[in-house]
Every structure is written in C-alpha cells, then in structure tokens.
Length: 404
Image (cartoon, rainbow, N blue to C red; front, side):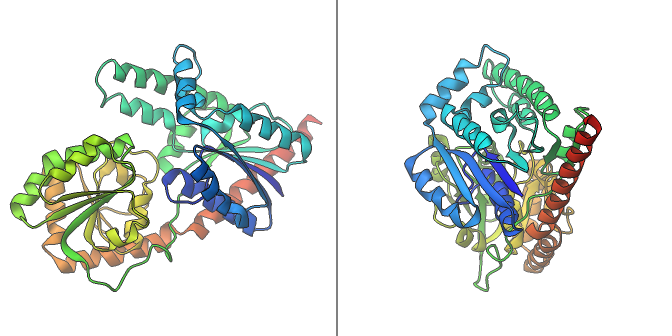
C-alpha cells in the first residue's frame, strides 16, 4: 500500500516518548512492504539534520521547520477561540501545503495520523481510508494539569482541556478508525460515543537495545529518567525530593538519586543541591544510568498512556517503583512484576524493600524483564496494528460499496 503518515514530532531519532511509537510503526509498515511517506514538524536545524536518519525506514519524508516563538504565538492567538491552543502549536502553513501537494500528486491507499494535534492536516479528506492514533487522550492531560496549577493558570488548563475534548470528539468522527495506546485510554475514546470503529495497541520496548547488563549495580543508587522540561516529570521529582527523599536518607544515609533527563528547569537544577541528589541534564545514553541503579522510580501523579521509561527499565532488568496512575499504562501486575505506591510512606517502604533485599531485587528484575518480553514486545504490538489496518481498509471498502 501507499501510506501517508503524519505525526506531530519528527519520529527520528526515537529517543523520546512522542517519537518512539510512530517510529516503530513506520519501520514496521515499511518492513512489511508498504511504501510509507512521513510528514512532520521539526523545531531546529539540528532536529532536521538528525531526522534525516529516518531515510532507511521509509520511502520518503517531508519536514516543515517551525520555531517555538512563532508556534507559541499561534497558541496564544487561539486562546479566545474554540479551537484548542495546542492545535496552533502544531500548525504550519508549510506542512499543510506539503500534505496538500502530496495528496494531489499521488494515489494513496491509507492515511495514518499519529496525535490528534496534526489531524487538522487531513481532516477534509474523504476518498482515502484514514486512521487516527490518538495515542494518549490529550484532553484528559490538560484537565489533570488544572488540578496542579494555581489560579488563573488552572482556569486556562481547564479551558484548554474542554476545548481539546470537543476537538477530539469532532476529529474522531472524521476518521474511519481511531486508536489509543492503552486499554484505559481506549475506554475514554470509546466513551465519546462517536460511532467510529476503535481499538488500542500497546507501546512496545526494544528488548535487545534495552537489555540487562552483567556489570554490578550500585546498591545505594536509585534513578528517575525523563525530560525535565516536562511538567509531570517536574512535579513528581519536586514532590519526591521534598516528601520522600528525607525519609529515605534517614534510613539509608548513603543513598543517591540520579535525575536523568534533558533540559532541566532552574527549579529542577536546584534539586541537585540536596544531599545525595544529582541532576545530570541531557545525556547521550540513559542506559548506563539505569543499569547502575538498584531501582528506578516513576512517582508520577500525572500520567496518560504508557510511560516508556518504565518499559525500558523493566526490560533492562531494573526493578521499578511507580505510582498507581503510571502503572495503569503498563501491562504488568503490582508486586509480581513491579511495586506500586500511592503515599509517601508506601513509596519509602517499597524502595527500601528492594534496597534492603538483594533477593527481592533479583526476583523483580527477572519477572519484570520477562513480562516485557511477553506483553510489551514491538512485534506483538505491530501484529495488532496490522489487524487494525486490515479492518479499516475492509470497513472503508464495504462502506463505499453501500454508497455506490
């Protein structure tokens, strides 16, 4: 098939959440014999240069470069209107022209869109079957943000969430098939009652790249992995260091925390002044930091979809202590495959349980990796994607015959 694939972040290199899922889809579809043309945005010349590495994994690619100041202005311009501001952040006249040109120049068998914020580029197309992979339901994320922001910011986030919710429902009706990342996100999508066919397929993890090491780990080191310009990561680490870290230091004075992730804000950098805490900033490869850790923490209060950091740590045989909300995006069982906590005391107890018992750490390490191999392998997820594509094409053909 000739497939036009549109996504909100250029999907190479696949080093962050918004790039990993689309890259693996593109790579799989191309390897399956389809001709895939990728259209997306880049935000710097460096990202554009790095993005060219996708060439071996697709038939062609188009990128439109935008600047954050301009895109921020586009967001602000949409504050007084019904269209979500985030749609403005991912709008580019250049990308729209590129997509329109491709639609006119070629015959397409399928249009695949990852992320609702870029569905605007193909929403008018009616003569080609279309799949919209929401991934996460962004409206729910904005509404959740409102609970953590002071007034009047809370009002702004709540308004954006409501606008995004209306947009998600409207856009879903304009596509032939809609998908999500987790069963919980799918339930939200299905609850919209649009009448459009829906399903979900999970994120996977590259278990060969993220594999265990035979090198010894530091029994006094724990880690957190994630971009530190992302509010949910900032909120959880600020809270962790304020509420949980003092309890852990009291019990284990030599314990160390590595906060590993790009672009830490000034507030996050200050966490590095705390005893035992290191804020690394951007690193070329997160794997050595994870492998050196006795465990990884993911105490997120705001988490939609699947936290790839959890999949990666478990695939590497490093135990994870996570919040219940973040655990919901992982196909694994609490206690059996990882530990789940809600309160300060529960986090402290779960972390110390692993640090104080090497046998328990080893049990969780083995069980966690095995679960990733069985339930979060990309080939299994992509097999579900193939079924979804087949259903979409079949449903579209049947509906055309009925109209004929």
